[in-house]
Length: 120
Image 1 (cartoon, rainbow, N blue to C red):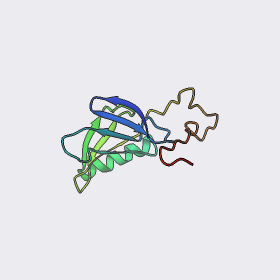
Image 2 (tube, rainbow, N blue to C red):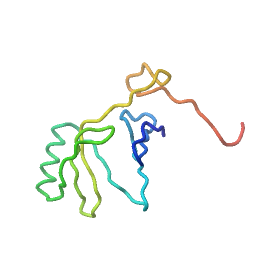
Image 3 (cartoon, helix red, strand yellow):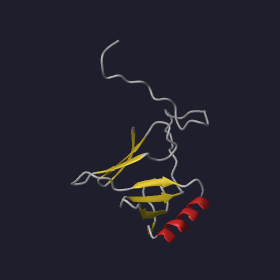
């Protein structure tokens, strides 16, 4: 994974071939645990439909303005008490000059293979 940003106690990491700003956000805490999971809706309209259903179910917590890498998100709690959010607007990965590819179905060139183990 490639680091895309740092903000306070959080590090944002992006998996190879992910088109979005980051794949995983890791935040330092005193205890281990899952902070929340974010899901991207398939469209803005789908997001609006999900929010209506979440509000009807009583699981909704409300909207947040967003976070690094994504816009407004609707937060909710699952029946087993896990915090989640659903969103639509995301920031896309911007490759630097050495990562740029002409292939539209890839966000970047294949990184060079590096082996830190046994010699061949």
